[in-house]
Length: 370
Image (spheres, rainbow, N blue to C red):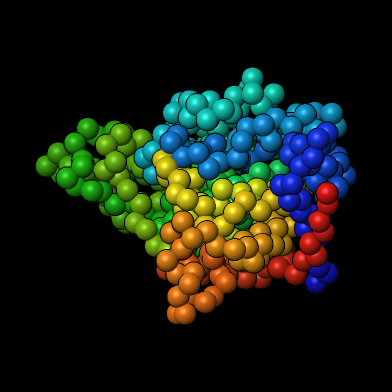
């Protein structure tokens, strides 16, 4: 396979060319203007950040991207899908308020902010992909029905996948709540009995009559449960929960990413700065594991993520971060900063599988622009 082109710019500026100018030059050089954007509904898939976490992408970059897209005739909107966990982005009302709190609003972005899978995470389209784990993928409707998909990703560590890059943003981020359940777990939820109040909302909202109350506690009939995740979406007491299973999760994320970009032009941008050890879904962010590096863009999300990993691993480690204690020890002479931050995951698995299913290539040419 031919090497993919990954375009990169560092964070050095000069009078008359600030970071927003460099960002715009980067995406244009990388070819965003070659996409037919005229009157195209263009989804900008972004993570709005859990309130309290300050490592997410600055809204200024989203505004500049929107202006570039609008000049090309696009109809852009910022979007993300609701979360499986019970933070402040688990339903559209809380999610939009969180986005606004973190600076992403129609006024600041210059375009609408739309929650991709609706009010409770149940608005999705099943995209046929016929892969090893998933025959179809439950992709949030606003993303599935868009004409063009652009991902803006804060590159950072991640406790389940080693790192969170374009693939994680596209796959996990585009999935509805039921889709996230499918990617994270064995596919069926469980009831945390002490947390269950017996309110019955899960019973009323189960489309498959798989839940009933026994002694004022919810009980799931797994012979009927299809793992749609609706009970997780509607439970206000965190009693309906996923059963976590990391085995195969990275492969499922790659399959969902494949579904998200299926049959439409897509373009991807990674912001390799504030490289925190954990996901932006946490309500706090720890010290970055490496200094800020730059911004990279490509039509190939696999090559983009591989290049981002390589750039992080080639950078000097931050001795004040969670990996600092390992940097000078003979036992930890590895340059793999991602693994030092997340030693219980193998970040290579997701990239290898994404390449295997044809989502992209790990062979890339890094092209630096000023």
